[in-house]
Image 1 (spheres, rainbow, N blue to C red):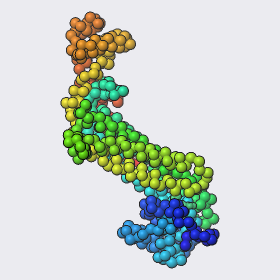
Image 2: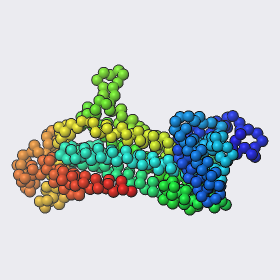
Image 3: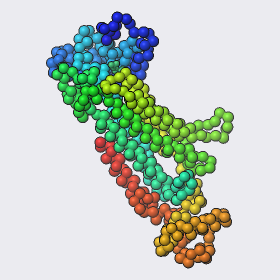
Image 4: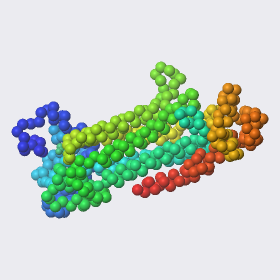
Length: 461
Ligand code: ARG
């Protein structure tokens, strides 16, 4: 017998039974669902909508069901549709007719909105903890590599020399913003929709604030239609997760590149690499590639839910049942990726020599040569033109800027003096960039200190 069977003369078609049931996936919300019901039952008793002893029976029954589900002793029924009705059905079977009072002043519409908020709140906290761990590992690496010189790129062509610490600090900034986005999402989602009913609230004198505070919410939603039909909070999570995955993916792409034979900037630990079934020499960065690949899944989850929501009239529509699988998939994917990237970074070997070697070729000091002239009074645009000609000349000769003699330099401009060689030394080029946000070891060390403080602040929220 369906919990809503009263107005029906025929039973649900078997195909529909399976088609519309969500218990296969929403059973994942059992704990949130039961905790929400316990708070609701307690409030019903306290405001006198049901008797206090009835409320106690409901709460005891719900607690026993929670324990049994946790112990793996409960089998859910497809026929009972979803986690909400499975729990309610079990409750009535166990404690008798009083179980039928639980749903007073409530609808599955506000119930499911509540469950998903509770669920996401926990998963956001869990995801944040994983990002924090990753940031700490990156900060440690940056601290260690303040003087590990490497080439910086634009268009994947060598641009200017930097350090590995400086490069990693770029990712640290991205992940700190990701933490901020997760904090924002959590703050906005932390209001209770319970009391919205099906869509028009209820005539029962429910105490919404009491339920909200028992469940750790900061307040209650202010419109009953919105309370049951808002999925912004899930979309915000998916958007934050997508951006976070995009950052992980870019980082992983660089690890793939750096571990290639052409770069050899890093060597992945064996534990985070895999071999080939045919080519005995292979050691592939599959983990990093897979993180890059899985980014697509999370974007897909975001797009799917945006598309589900875009044309829905207010308020609840069954389409919205499609929110959960997307959210679950994104949570699982994001957390698995965060979990594996941290130790992969921690265990990789940095080949300092190869990185420093890479910083040297490719005229990465050409800007510094132009700046040298500009500092001696040559207008920068002119200096740029002169150095461009010098680069062309050196390229034809197959030599670097440091290999030209002073007299050769002076045939191009009388401004050149012996101190030019110091100015274009790779180490000097980096050390001299002391501007805030720049790559000099002292600037980066300061940026690390500030980032640590930002991290602590984000954790307070
Ligand atoms: N299983 C449903 C969902 O996930 C619960 C809400 C159902 N409400 C309804 N009126 N059919 O959205």
